[in-house]
Structures are given as structure tokens and as C-alpha cells.
Image (cartoon, rainbow, N blue to C red):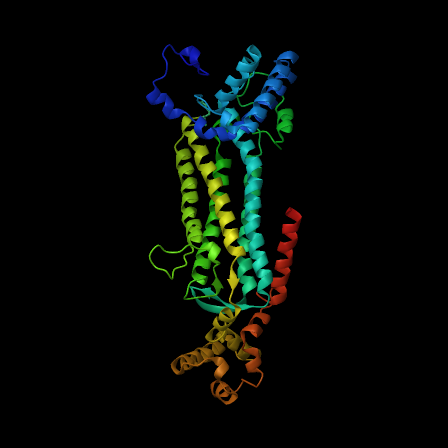
Length: 460
Ligand code: ARG
């Protein structure tokens, strides 16, 4: 009969129909490196506590290093009939060094082992995801830089609102992604606590120096409660939330670019390299990669929801349900990584049509500027709003815009309009009239652009 980590108590081999169902090695092999890292530190802690002889500790350390090396050289070797990655590493260790290998698990439980592995994994993988997010930010920054003083309409309720710089629009997405980057830092900080020393649930009975062990593994703190630690997957949920929100932001970029590259808008041109054709309609150029990014956001959100539901009804302590934590985390991680790479690639190749965006930024969306003009001449804003509302109604009826009005016509609406109104009521003047640091004023946008460029350079 195959040996399992717990065979002693049982007199029958497990029924494959029940046992194979619970195997996690297929997916938790991704924690291989972290499992070995955790075990190396545990062996050192047991040796420090006088639980392992120096010889045994040296044999275990040598064996684990050899296993790590072999697994790195040939990832396909990390495979077999084992229940999970922890059983695999232990089996390989015993095969290599015999009895000393059987002493490694002293005072330790797989409940805390899987937690430490998972925390180590997230700690080393999150920076990779952040690098992918920075690629998207860099693409937006590059496009914003190239857009110069090009103008476009901004929208509220998907109706033209006020003129903005194209760069201001592009950097609005960069600002959201910058928060995602920060949120992933927070997720990494939450995972940064050592659960070892918790035992299966009540704590370990060996005098292990957990502070020293934490330091050895690069954790900044030790968990405060062993019962909580054995079932705590909050850090995984936090990670999934950070990933989900980043996917929501990529999805919104995708949606905007799908709209703005459509025939109806024509603000940007999608590169042929970023699009796919239709098997039937020869004229089509479809934004498939962006549609997929938008679609995959649902998948990430599903993983977050799934884990929360898995966690919500658990009785205190470790429960096998928690094994359902890994696949969503791994898939969410992969999903965000590929989506960010695809989004950055599409953004880098977008071509702006500044004549079209500029044309769309003039016309009746300058109404707020007209009202502001009257306010600058002393009219109360509410009254100005009404005067300009009447102008808009008239212009709509006549099919004309503010730019077409002669000064006499301006003055028919209000005597306060003077010659300078023509220069004040343009899209370029409108963005210059915004004054706050977060506004679309060209100097404010340039400062935001420079700050992002500096931040990117500092991260590199
Ligand atoms: N594969 C398990 C998991 O992912 C490891 C912990 C197993 N612990 C246990 N008592 N069966 O959660």
C-alpha cells in the first residue's frame, strides 16, 4: 500500500474515488520552491532549539538544497502520485537522506506549512504583477507624452461634457493603475507574517524561536494567534480583491479604447497588429484582445467571490475547504499578468487622430465656459446658466455653434458679452481656464506626467 503522511492510524488503503478527489499536487506544485524554502528555515529552527542534531540538520539542509536545484533545473520532475507538494518534498528528502528526513516534520503541521508556502509565494510573485501593471502605465504615459496639446471631449453620462487634453484623459487611467500598484503592496504586506509555530492549531510544543524564524524567512512579524493562523486566508482574499480591481481598471481601459477606435468615434486608430479580422466580413477590424481583457475581468471577480464564499461558513480551525484557495489565486494572477501585457501592447500601438478629437472638443460643450465668462462679468452663476441654456436651445434649433456667432448675435443674449468672448470660448482656452492641480490645465497635466515618469524611472 502506498505510504501517506498519515498511514499509521489506518488499516485500509484509501478509496481512489474519495482520495484522488482531494489531491492537490496538480496545482500546488506551484508552491514547490516556497515549500523547500519554508522547510529549510524550519530545519534550522529545530536545530537551533536542539531538537535536531547538527548532523541531521546538515543532512536535511543538503537534501533540501539538492531537491530545490533538481526541481529548478527540471520543473517536470516535480510530479508524482503524491497527495500534495509537501508530501512530495518529504518523500524526495527521505529517499535521499533516509531517517534524518523523517525528523523534519517534528512539531510542524501541514496546516501552517501550506500557509507559510502560500505567503512566501505571494510575497515573491506580487512584484512580478506590479511590473506588468507598470508596463500599462508606461504605455499610457508614452501616449500622453506624444499627444502633446491635442484636445478631446470628456464625457459624463457618455455625453460630451467639457474639453480636456488627450493626455489628461490617458493619465486618468494611469492614476487608477497607480492605485492598483499600491494596493498590491498592501496585499504583500498582509501576507508578510510568519504562521510557523502555530502547529496544527494550538501552537507547537517545541521551543522554536519564532522571531528568529520569521527573520530567517524575511517575514516582518509573527501571527498573533495559532487558531486564527490555521484558517486565515484573508491575505489571499485581499490579493484577489487587488487583482479584481486591477482587472476592473484594465476592463474600463479596454471598453474606452473599443469605443474610441470605433467608426463612430474614430479618436484613435487600432493598429492592424492589435486587431483581428472577420471570417466573413472583409471590412472588419475587431478589437478582440481588448474584448478578452474586458471578459476576463469577470473571471477574476469570480475568483474573489468564490474564495469569500468558501471561507464564510467554516468552523474555527483548518478545514480542507481551504485547499480551494490556491487555484483561484493562481488563475487570477495569470489572468492579470496576461491581460496587462496585452493591454500595454495594444496601447503602445494606438495612433491618435488629433484633428478628429479636436473637432469633437468644440461646439456646444463650451457652454460652461460661456457661463463662466458671464460670471467673470459679474452675473450670478445661476442666471448665467439660464442665459447660456437659452443660447444652446437657439443654436441647436439653428444647427450652429458658439464659434459661428457674430458679436452682435452674442450681445442679443447678453450685453455683458464683449469682443474677447470669441477668444475665451475655444477648447484650448477652456483647458487653460481650469486652475486646480488635478485639472486638465496643460501645466497641471505636465506635472502629473512628469511625476509618473519619475516614479516609473525610480521603480526600474
Ligand atoms: N493541500 C492542503 C491545502 O491546500 C494542505 C494542508 C493539508 N492539511 C491537512 N490537514 N489535510 O490546504
